[in-house]
Image (tube, rainbow, N blue to C red; front, side, top):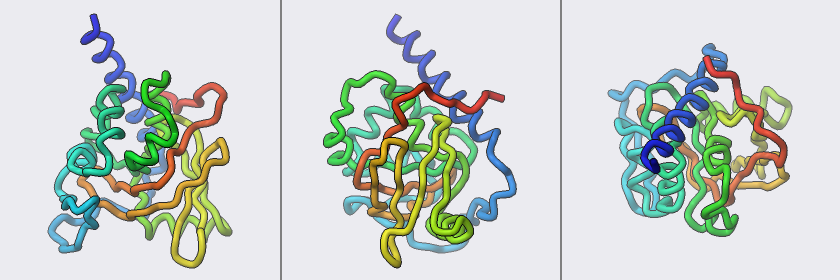
Length: 201
């Protein structure tokens, strides 16, 4: 029974994120990078991140994201992060996750899907969108809510959630074959109302 429930949860999470991806404007100016072009991916906690691995494989190798990874797997959202497509993940560290006191909380799939933005937004794309937006840009999440990215000083980007919480990006541009991960220092959460999930395609 438990396995059936988990399978249903995983399918639902994958559909949520997949449906959100289908609603994204495909004219994204940042295509998937050519894996033959050499660049240095940042390390996380001293662990190498490989651009030819998917998001889930890379984040699972991070020594700073064990709690986040366990929650992704338990909620079923991990399945979607191994899929094709392009996603941007704002990944809270273990310390950030613990400080938010979310372990064992309900609606974990919704909370984690709020940290995922369909499309590939590396730092260059975020800076461009912030500049074009007059100082901030609104990002539609897979959960259906909104994150706001703004500058925090001349070089840093901060991300605001619907509750007014602020997270700074501590590690930028961990490139993966199906997207990009930014490590954040605080947990970001959706608003208290009902989820505004993007319609499934």
